[in-house]
Length: 372
Image (cartoon, rainbow, N blue to C red; front, side, top):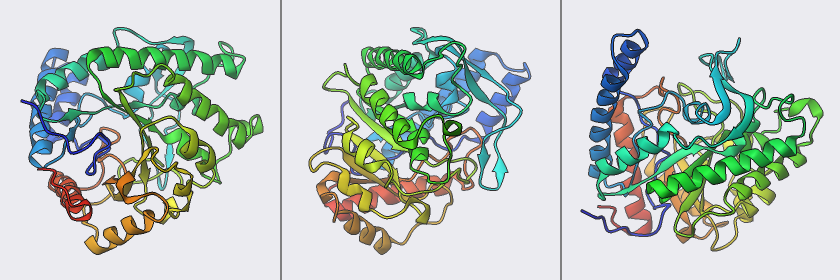
């Protein structure tokens, strides 16, 4: 069965990708960790729950579906630690978020970086694509190559020159993109907390070794380099996130510092932008998006709590954004995933589904289309 798509992605009604893990999946992961379940038995539980949430996304009227990231623990670390030259480990401290410290886990550079042709995400995608069976378009989300520039990952003993480090990351992602495309991916999302951090005025970078401007320029070159050989029929978007862990956030700041470079020149088909609260600033940086260029997916619906936003307020904010980007170049989504890590945000699954249905209904009112 195939679906009739209303437009090329990003669609009017979108979502970032991750979904709240059900209790039985949490239990299965714990049982696996304690040796009570085999890897095959854990995968069976994951697959059963993925089938359920795929059906639910389609039932809500979404044209794009994901596996909810049910086979991962973190939005980025599971992908990165399966690259050659990168390993996962438990540091002394977790990431610092507003009011809390995260679970202690990260990745580090241990050798020359390259793509692993046996990367488990490839099978995860083909299994998901088989489950969806043409009923909607599958979106594959992976961390942006720029996530490897976060503090503490780059090993200067292996890569004394940051340009050599960047060059191998670019080649790794070129190979990754080709592998996903060959597996059937036609819609790829790059999740990029690092780039959003470059626009946070209070965050210092590399102890002053590189200026913010240098790093913004490098981030642009890395993404565009990774996309240099992208097939024409592969849609690629970037999601900019300011942190999403148990309904908390890591930093704040508008997009103003990165807009003239990254929003204007990054060669992607769309940007998923957080706009659910005052931390994100106003819409003025959107004036740097080329007219007719990247689709702007407005993250006006928060994923951090279950309360539904006021409909007229959301409509007014879409209208306000259209002063800088034409309405036809805008879409709507939650500001982030509902569970960027396995812990999940502080809302119920019913509230999660209500949010996504609300987005579908709002897009029908604003753009006058049907997602059903």
